[in-house]
Amino acid sequence: MKKDEIFEFFRRLAELNPDPQTELEFKDPYTLVVAVALSAQATDVSVNLATRRLFKVADTPAKMVALGEEGLKDFIKTIGLFNTKAKNVILLSQKLIDEFGGKVPEDRAALESLPGVGRKTANVVLNTAFAQETFAVDTHIFRVGNRTGLAPGKTPLDVELKLEKVVPQPFRRGAHHWLILHGRYICKARKPECWRCPVIDLCAFKPKTPAPTAKSAGSASPAR
Ligand code: SF4
Image (cartoon, rainbow, N blue to C red):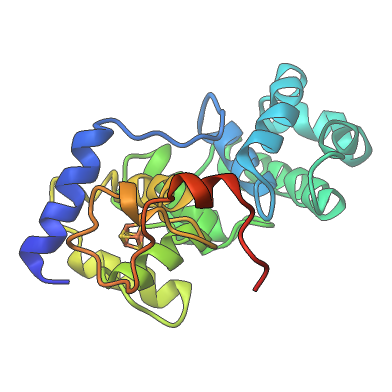
């Protein structure tokens, strides 16, 4: 995608959603770290259902450690991989108390030193809690970056580094939210809804999905 096309791509997404937000519910950097750690291979909806109850009881590292691993599991057992996630959340909370004065650090290396926090989680926290221009490449962004030709890459890190390079201001801070929402609701994995896509003329993906006809909308698609 050319430079002016990339600008236009984000200009349109920004026009449709000027203030994009994460769909995970949180109230401060700590609750965001916990919510993102719980969200791996789980939907934001399922995480929000659990954290709405959890954060009433434990919304600080000290309260989380006091709740303990078994206590935490009771709140998050509806979420996939909850055993590992409970262990990591307690360990990361203890580490925040021991090494960071109970506060979430604003630094990538320090964030990635926390149990269960990888590059993607660190990028989400740096972007959403600390307003840094980072690009957290999840499955949606990886797909959209490749399909559209915006930021092609073989690995999430390739796509992230490409986005770092090509996304212009004033869109760098919001870019990852726009791309996630675009991938989640329009440029879907199995069948992108190209017919209602605001960037259809800028996108390199072929063939574009046509609008469903009355007939196809009423009948199930054949299995492939
Ligand atoms: S035109 Fe289709 S493939 Fe391209 S970004 Fe839009 S929905 Fe995705």
